[in-house]
Length: 442
Ligand SMILES: NC(=O)c1ccc[n+]([C@@H]2O[C@H](COP(=O)([O-])OP(=O)(O)OC[C@H]3O[C@@H](n4cnc5c(N)ncnc54)[C@H](O)[C@@H]3O)[C@@H](O)[C@H]2O)c1
Image 1 (cartoon, rainbow, N blue to C red):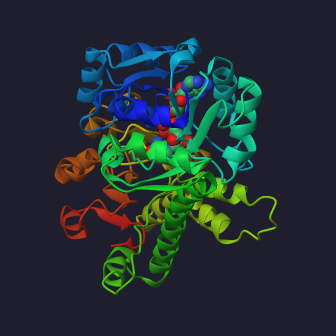
Image 2: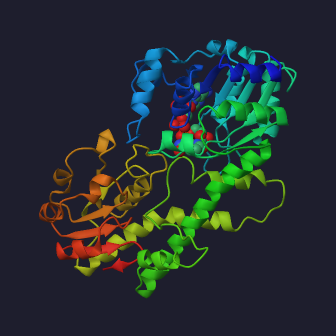
Image 3: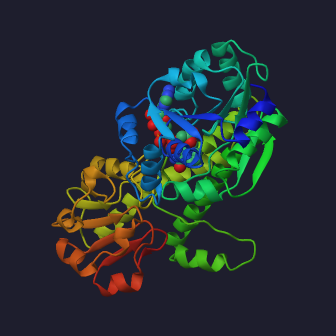
């Protein structure tokens, strides 16, 4: 198919679509294009996920407004079908790639999933197909890795045999559909005609700016926006530690700082997790690996944010010491194990680090999380007989906790809050010893 024919097929919705990787990003994207009237297949390697999706049930358990209904609808109409078989891609005109792109222990992306996709896709790819990488990748990866591998495995050449672009996602769990339809996107193409085709396609689901760019710009924008967030959170966290040291309250400080023009101090917190923010700054940095760029800020921000769950343990120790207790042997309730409020996503969970540290120091952690089957259940049952509570995630359920019941279930009323979920006045009048990240003992 020539690029103008591809344009026509997008215009009259006869283009056949595929989404490879039906996770937090790929599943809602596939469902939205299906709902827009395209014929979409989703390729996924997890058999149970494929079965669940084909039965019209979303495998994403968190609070995801509209997704369950949307998925049920597009499966019923037959516009979306999931499969494990790459042979199904042979008639696809447009293929979106949405697989995970983690970094390893040395913070280097190995792209196992992406390489495997390209190896399976190349031999079956239709001539003239448009391949769009939605996954977050280091700047330069389309040119240095995706293009050569796709040429190698397909035996075809760029623009003669296929078109290639990068259109990174900006979604966040809890707001997947909303973010998808309302946030602007950068449509990176290996040629300007490719960018235009990508824009024409996404126009069906994105009701915001679609900006044409080259691939490296699209890759840079995505990794930069998440590195920006990580650095800003690290700054807020460092100020939080300073506030604790000098007897201030970072939550009040932040509120007042942000009254000053052009200041948008981020929220501090008990840790940064998820699939994206902890690794995207490393992807950005990796893009410059051959350029002798002295990296100082990005690694420092990562180190600060990674240290926050350990700081929460220090705060807990202080709280226990203040009442003459020891951490060793203490039974500690950890509220929240997902990395984000009202989500079931536990990837790079700060609570995992906290729990490990508590065990190392001889404490006995007891985890509760309403969104994760393993840890769900009655929170007061979990709290019964424990020595302290550490709040790690601002799930809505925790904001509504009955403080009197919480206090009477605990052996000692110690509450360490890593997200300022509780209002100090209320919690103190309920009789708790209240410690808050960025404010210390209140
Ligand atoms: N989660 C987010 O909030 C978010 C936001 C923006 C961008 N991103 C980026 O999007 C990409 C995907 O993230 P995600 O959170 O959806 O990951 P995910 O792990 O939820 O989904 C990836 C899916 O791809 C599947 N998969 C892996 N290898 C495959 C293969 N060879 N063939 C077919 N399927 C395969 C996995 O089984 C999984 O279901 C990443 O690059 C991420 O950085 C994620």
